[in-house]
Length: 400
Image (tube, rainbow, N blue to C red):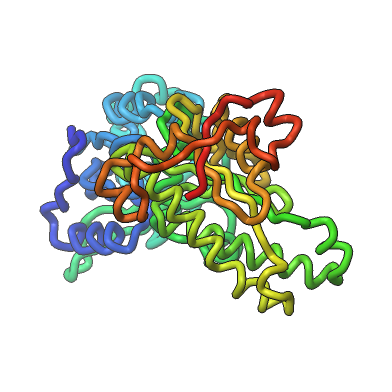
């Protein structure tokens, strides 16, 4: 059984070549020998099954043996309850039967006892196909939501024509054209970060809230198409700044931007606080160029920035049939929104809780002297909103 360590390439040269190519190209795939026994699983497959750590691989076990079925049932994402194993076995049945030489008795002996009653239901296949495709319902890890998975099974042959084994390449049932449209502008590193918060949990993080000032007058003055383009340019600039600073992009509501900088991802609380401040500054610096793209004066486009620290905010992914996003819950998230609402005039207001997470090196890199910073309670700011005075009057903030 392979645990957290890297899965070794198969000993057979033909299978090793296929396994290495699929792994290097980032495919979700499993490799089996001529007897349908596990010999390899790509890292992408192991991570999608294991969620927080690479999933174990029962090397040498038949793909539907009791050992392999139980290993998959024990994956933390709950991808493979026994119902899914039975459904998958029936869908893969023609291949499994052909690979066994059409010997149902041998196949029955090789598989998990909980699947043996299905062997007689498998449709006979005329020989072993070079490629075999089938769809079955799976489970999306950590959500329990059923999804359709498309599997492509390829027979791998040696140079002499003999069967070396099989490659099972999986993907969501959605077509590649749709996948490309959804992910073409995505940042690969950010996708990896999102994968690390698939399971929601309490996580120390810096929180960034930003919103366009005077958005209502702008929306009334600009044509709808122009205002839409303005919002698109703001969102792209903001997301790029957040990603480059090591953060996770949260939701976009109207002209607003939310982002989280997790200590566990960037390496420390100080690095998270620094990334949050750097991202806010970068967004602010990008606004004049964004304004010019929409033929606005540089000083007409301003954003409010509220930066705060959350020691125990609950951060994770929300996945629905319509979208995937990272969100955070907790009082500190609400307080960050209160700080942002008070940051009129395009100011970057950061809480004392956030600023004092900075170590001397990160503070110096930001040009901040922690011994000379002066803080003001939200309620004492001339720009304090009624909600801030009511809900978070004592939060101390400064401009960064």
